[in-house]
Length: 121
Image 1 (cartoon, rainbow, N blue to C red):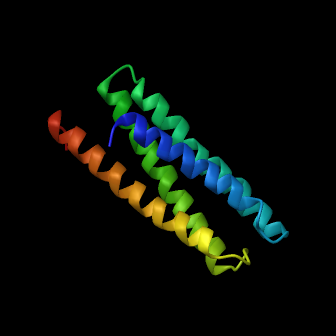
Image 2 (image 1 turned 90 degrees about the vertical axis):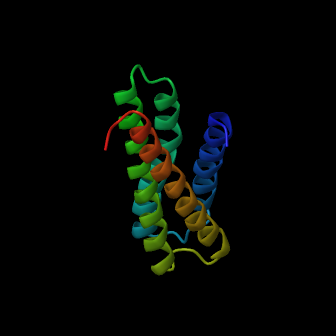
């Protein structure tokens, strides 16, 4: 997968999360969780864009690690919302959880490979 393809996938993930939030049952909990989901899911795409433009290898790794943290936060948020039954329609949230898991694997591997290539642990 190219950097451009991954960036587009992250944008699609963020857009899907935004669209999902419009389907939530209206409550204080859903508003709170959805606000945070929008922040964390969009942060991944934005930070990945910054990582690609990083001024140094250290900056690149730092931004990639932020992406990984935000992906994990997004996944946990989706799991909490799923278990709290904040959505009537459950297929979309299940699909987003699966996508978050795949993206977490991609970023974990990419960070590890980049560090190894550059002699870091």
